[in-house]
Amino acid sequence: MKLNRLETVAWQDSQLLYHAQPRLGREGLNLLSPGAPYVCIGYFQDVAQEVDVDFCRANDIPIFRREVGGGAVYLDGEQLFYQLIIHRDNPLVPASKDAFYRKFLQAPIAACRALGIHAEYKPVNDIVANGRKISGNGVAEIGDYIVFVGNLIVDFDYEMMARVLKVPDEKFRDKVYKTLHENLSTIKRELGSAPPCEELWDLLAVKFAEVLGPLEEQTTVDEEWRAKADELAAQFLTDEWLYGKKRPGEGREVKIRAGLQVSQKMHKSPGGLIRATTELQEGIIAAVSLSGDFFFFPEEKLAEMEKALEGVPTGEVERAIANFYGEHGIESPGVTPADFAKVVG
Amino acid sequence: MEIAGFEFPDDLYYDKIHGWAKVEGNVVMQGLTNFGQAIAHEIVFAEIPRTGRDVEQGQTFMSMESGKWVGRIQAVVSGKIIEANEELEWEPSTINESPFGDGWLVKIEIADSSELDNLMQADSPELKAFIEEEAEKYKDVLS
Image (tube, rainbow over all chains, first blue to last red; front, side, top):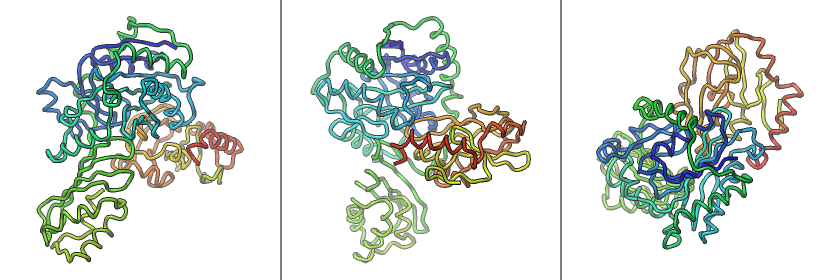
């Protein structure tokens, strides 16, 4: 298999090149990094709901819709991308998605471990170090090929990631920032400093070769590949492609890593609008913030109720709120525990 | 018919990518089998194809996402898509919850009914052998 060690490429090529390979019937492993920052959204995402498009436009941050799954991410040159394009009938391809991720994530995990980072596989597709995500990964089936893409995060601009996302309000943005910072790590954070990129590329190449077998290295994009990528640019860099998917919006959810997400939901109850920002960990409420234009007496008990919901599984929210109402004599005209349960979790 | 612990309704046809086909006159309703949804995990997005589109048997015509994996769905028969289950766009997990019922994908006006011969029936030894082999392959996912 070819190892396309391209290192720094134009931002759009960091996406277009791997979209072109399956269309040319080529297998390969690409190691590269974007030359400029951009935002990349998942195949099914609605860009207007996920990304602050006005902010990105005003700050010259391009937005790209990939054919791979997953969520919106802020990508820049501080992230090392690996992109594996492999035919579905290649004997190296395991039968199941789980086994596929587990097998090919071995390479970046081994690279992290060689650096002294205690990286582990977290099903289905994350790599974590000390409980924090350190790599993002996803897959697309394109024709007869499976395209697996991921990154090793050398350093990360948490603030910019939280800034480019479309959020209902600044409180939610602050929550996303804090949760990202607490749950997403980088090579720099784990080691105190990062080795030179050259060393990291070498390490990734060696570790992938251990999984894929001998790799034949090339460092340039040939004419046919370039032409196909340029042809795809005419589709993938259009507003028609970027805005082509729209989804209904009754709330907002940002997935930080497998099993951890921050969501904001709203519900118009007879007693007024209720808004909840919830941090969920493995289906358990880790934190919740309630607001809206409803009446809640005694008013000071609302913060206590938020606290009481910590540690409650999502399926038991209504019962927990009903218990709290009973214990504290809560009155909330037109708003029932069931109304709160609709927005929490 | 139960194979490897999964139900395969007797009145349906099956392909080798875990699709099912229900024949109603000249229309074939297509879906994902219970086995197919089990190995896919929770489906979080489904792309609904436009009606009126012609598809070939085995041709990719829609996508689904589970576990950040965008997978493609292929047509069980050739013909024209006359209806798509638009509810799936809002509630894709219906495919997991009711694969043989509300989680159906599309209805195709069949172009050539002899293509059904390319599919397997619930009581065929071929389906039994295929599913048993698949169950072995996916045992880590199904356990």
